[in-house]
Length: 608
Image (cartoon, rainbow, N blue to C red):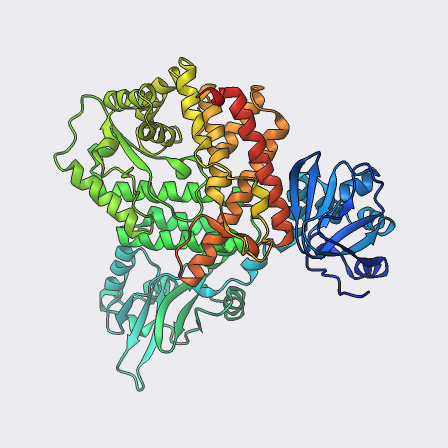
């Protein structure tokens, strides 16, 4: 074979050794001049082409459909159908591997993943990838480090402290153990005293107020470092028949790792974070839990957990975190006579890494709020900023008086947003439609939302204006022409939010608003629209798959930025995408294009 075949490119990266040898035995190289037809319409193809150098454009009639670059392959579907439905033309000087049809057929028959990635639709490709990667889902958990788990703070007492005082410390700090410093021994030593030692103290008969804790402490400490694997720590616990180890390094004590926390971490990270939040006694402890959420997202993503499940989990954890923060800041009477809610991606359950705050407060009609309500709300907004949730540039936070009103006043304001639809009002209306309660009397929010939904179908012009926001970010030419660099120009960044996420989210939101769908999540809205016959089932599936693909790419960008200390935007460098990701990006942007066309027809956006 004149040039080495790249088996790291999709779909060939899923082949085993024997299948790779089959490729080597049945491949050669072809070259084409700029403008030369590689495959013509109506031809019966005999090969699958895999580009080495250059680019090939695909046309249907005179309309360009796609462009292929190095490591991309074409045309698997035509090979199986026996006929080319379009034209494939060299955009510049092209060199390509040609894999004969018989070898491709054998690979498809013997490797279902290869076949799915070669010519399946979007859902089929994503399903194949999920199945192929599923075996790796727990890998990151088995490789997790002690420092990633919940290490509980260490509480120190002097060896002369009496047992009654230690028990009072147990109760005050909600702990079951203390570290004991014995400075009278030579050299000084450090031990641990637990509730097990308390049982021995009670049975010993000496008055507990006169019994020094140092006499019952265990000085044979078992320690681990923050960088040790969790499974190594578990093995130590089993070996020494203990339920906790001291986490220490370089003479510094980081805290205590308990067996229950370790096992819970390996089986269910979210349980531990939830426990941290619910047991938090101050904002500092909630801040620790907020950092754990970010670590959890990284662990789950590296382990192959589906992005939709990660987003669902993050929504639940954030709701608990916001609720507990509000409980620590707001007085009980305010909690009982208001409803705190979140909006935007947080309300839809599609937030992953921390993004701008979108929250508000609706108050009970006729109830007199506390005189320091503004200060309370300011403290809540600042607390979330301290936890890593950025300030909303548009001021959509409870610190803004526009977003904390009595129920009737709030409902009137929302009606004005709908009936006087300037750009700012429509933006606020869209955000409010995603509202999800997190604390307080949820009936207050439902009252405001219910009045809005009653007006949903009364004004076609307003609905069309609302839906027209999907056209805010024009494609600026054929989107696929930006997926590759041709003529020596570097590929540009693609804004995933503008090109993919926003058209899907807002388009689905517009259809759901028209049909008075109460659901706030995009997935739930799609399901309701398909069930009502307002959205084709196939398009609904493709929209959800595309949404999750864009979310996954944005999550990867964000996690990479966190690891390198950079700020994350919504753009992605196209040259960093692998061939499979480029292929999926073409498919998902194609879905967006089809959906925007449907919205344009449905809402008659050309008439605006």
